[in-house]
Amino acid sequence: MYTTELAKTKNVVSTEDPGKLAAFEARVAADEFIEPKDWMPEAYRRTLTRQISQHAHSEIVGMLPEGNWIGRAPSLRRKAILLAKVQDEAGHGLYLYSAAETLGTSREQMIEALHSGKAKYSTIFNYPTLTWADMGAIGWLVDGAAIMNQVPLQRTSYGPYARAMVRVCKEESFHQRQGYEISMAMMAGTPEQRRMMQDAFNRWWWPSLMMFGPPDENSPNTAQSMRWKIKRETNDELRQKFVDITVPQAEAIGLTVPDPDLKWNEERGAYDFGAIDWEEFYAVVRGEGPVAKERMKARREAWESNAWVREAADAYAAKHARKAEAA
Amino acid sequence: MAKDWPLWEVFVRSKGGMSHRHVGSVHAPDAEIALRHARDTYTRRMEGVSLWVVPSASIIASDPSDDAQMFDPAADKVYRHPTFYDIPDGITHI
Image (cartoon, rainbow over all chains, first blue to last red; front, side):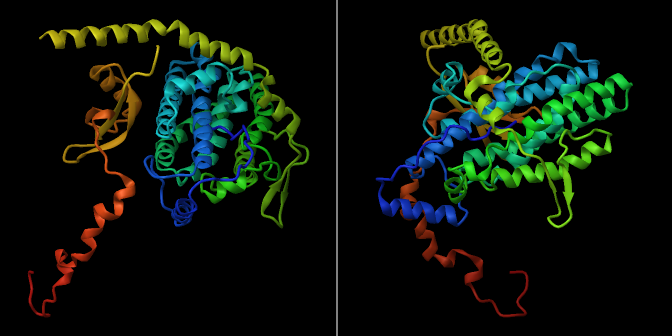
């Protein structure tokens, strides 16, 4: 899964040591990796902390729409696969929280920011999962868009983030393939199953394109992030790539892309596609997504109702520490 | 939880004969749970045959701003490398 970089901060004039700043810029320009104890500009630290923690939150919240279907999977095979996928998302969240912590923000602060509603996560998870066909569409499109975003991040300039992305990308490809397999099975099924799949595809297509974030001209931090090699490709470049590889996949199994303006452009060697409803995107960013409240409620309940597990682990550790001291 | 559990660094031996390699970190209240979390987080796909967890606070790291002094002296000791020595053609097994 992936998060778009949402909260935008104004560029502030740096008051940092120009020598250190120049040395930092030179290292990044030379494709060196920056590591936790290296000197870095505050704005770099802040941008990365925000991006990595939003990415981590997205993995964690991303478990909810699919977790919702584990108990209703149509076969034991599908259930085992979905369980493994959701467990992977938890793992991805943990890799990313660890990477963000190396920048000096504690896990506790990040979890607190998520639960209080202060932190953002990917808008995609605030859409509901209405039928089993949504599991196909999410794995294929949402994880597919995530992979498109995450592959270039394996070369992002911050070492711990890049390493986390290498692990995530290695694991994510199964997510997309199992989603496409569900979609294929649905499209090879009864007319009713095909209708369900087309409906799920229609609902997830546009939100998936929005996952790449606002258009480049409305993404003021992109230039800075590209220069610091936090980002390696722009939102629009990645979105175009996603459309170009996904359209033939949809057509191959008999799905119709819900975009009357979609057309192959021979000259560009790419698909032209219709305008994205950015009003909807910004509304979801503001927390007006169809199931935003439900997601945060489920997340907080999971955290609170399992507090006893953390408390028991604490009590157990304390007891053994006392015993070790007495011995 | 009042505050974060301590941080542990995780090292995995991918197969017999290889060294343990750093893969990431986990939070845990004690060593036993750290090992379990490390297993669930970093070895879901047979990535390893052995795990180490080490309290992060126990790791002593060199300071990157001292890199120059710390590692530079090696650069002027080229005679430590075999290519420094000229051996005539025709001399073999050396």
